[in-house]
Amino acid sequence: MIEHIIPLAMVLCLLGAIFSGYPVTFVLGGIGIIFAIIGGLPFAFLKIGVSRIYAGVIENWLLLAVPLFVFMGSMLDKSGLAQNLLYSLERALGRKRGGLAISVAVLGIIMAASTGIVGASVVMLSTLALPIMLREKYRPELAVGTIAASGTLGILIPPSIMLVLVGDILQISVGELFLGAIIPGLLLGGLYIAYIIFVALTKPHHTPVSTSQSSEGSLFLALMKDLVAPLLLILTVLGSIATGTATPTEAAGLGAICAMILAALNGKLSRKTLSDCVRETGSTSAMILGVLIGATIFGMVFKGLKGDRMIENAILHFDLGAYGTLGILLLLIFVMGFFLEWVEISFIVLPLFAPIVAALDFGLGLSQQQQLLWFAMLVAVNLQTSFLTPPFGYSLFYIKGVAPPEITIRTIYRGIIPFVGLQLAGLLMLVIWPGLVLWVPNAVFGN
Image 1 (cartoon, rainbow, N blue to C red):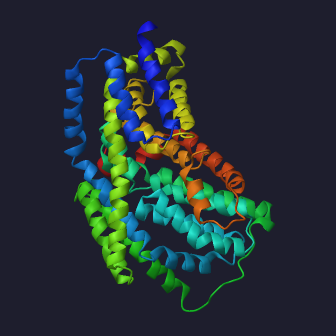
Image 2: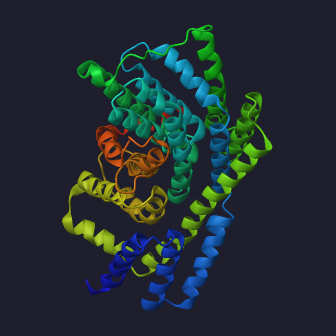
Image 3: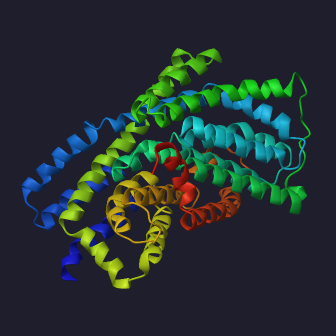
């Protein structure tokens, strides 16, 4: 027990320092260095950390996909394609009760598969759809809940920045992760739509029929025209990875080029647009890679102080079995999502939890690689809830930032509760039926 005092203190200091508001990058790296000195680790140990940062981050070819996917999503967000598609979906579904909310959910699924960036998706959906839903007398809680949940699909449905980083951390094929996320992402989107239909049937006054419909031009042609561009982008990125034509990094480059072409065809590509996209890409990428560097130092020192052994001993002490252990790990990640962003959680806990899960026997006949792929997807769905859970759910603040004054933070909190429940239900389904994750990768790449 005494040998675990220092790593336990390290974790407690990390939690306290994060709440101080100091940048997480410096918190992780600083605590790592301080506790390396307190724990009496040799100076040569930290020199190894510098080498690991250089080889694992700076020279990592796979991580080049991160800024490329961020740029692709940012450019697509400014291309105007989402606005056109929402108007077409509203024409198609708006005359049905709850049709406008279903249109938002469908648009969220499509844009998630096109952008892969939660912030861009939530702000875009809030700006485009929230004023219309409020004008049509939708219940505010349902409107903001639908937008927040649909927007967060961008972190799960490929191409997803999170899956690129998770694949790098766990040393899993990003292509298999992308394919494994298809069914879970569509499952969550389907649960959102099913809930909207349920509300429309049981509480029709919450989902009125839209009154502002335009009938100009052919609806079928408008839908096809507005769907072709995002579908081409999705097929370019995912198709090139699935067929082995391109690596995830090369596919991200193709996606960035295609997003620029689509913006140009839509008359939205300008010097200002390009400048804004580059600035957003640099800011987001710097944040992610900075956290990765800090987490590398923290994780290396934590393991050097036998922190990983502390966690393993604690889990073995309770002896909850394979599914009980998995449940505890997922519960810890869910609780951490109330206070930390997915980037920090991924880099801190995945290197510690992955070896534990890989050694568990679920009696499913899965290989270690398949088991890690399944676990990675469970973590990804779990981390998606971190965007919706207060007090630090980023999607909630994105919506509040663009919502009209009458939409209070309390209204937003009430609105996301059923959707968090739907996400947990989806997570439980993936735990019970691993085939929902593994079927597509096995069908494409073989067992």
